[in-house]
Amino acid sequence: MSDIVIHLQLEPYLAQWLINAHDSLPVEFPRNSAENDILEIYLIRTPPFPASNEPGENTVPIAVPFFKSKDVRGKKYLPLAARNTLKRCIRNRFVIQLWSDLFRFGYIGKQKQDLIWAWMDAHGIEATETNWNTIAKIYDRKRRAYNMRIYRAKIKKS
Image 1 (cartoon, rainbow, N blue to C red):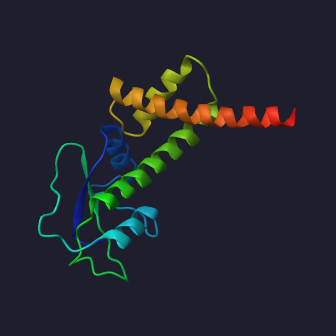
Image 2: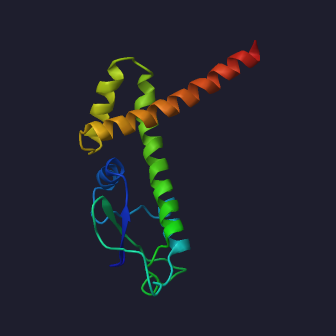
Image 3: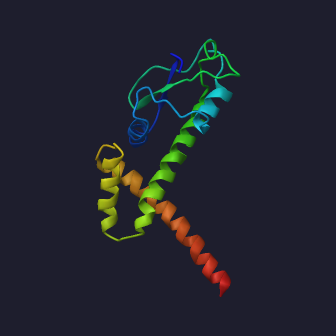
């Protein structure tokens, strides 16, 4: 890893999950990960009037690794569109982990609330109503989309 760090602003639940998932500050993504590919492709020289790259509320420090194809010492700025791409990639990994961990239980009715609280605790996410509501809504949307796909397949077979 290089000494270069970028600060990425994320939703509180996502920042807490990411730090817990990688067990380090600054966060170091695995070699050959999609996140590192985004960094390698989009890192540029710092423009004359850059957007802030300073630590702040809900920012996560991301370690920039060395790349064979790019000298990161001169290119340590991630443009806004690339930051948004990196955020979407991180959020997609979050949703995949949430889905794979919780869906194996299926929809258990009122116990869903306890499952989400326990999942948040296991993944280092602060136990607040805001975090719980956000995660529950993400899970419900995925479950509904999955159930609609099964429902449509059953109707098609009839």
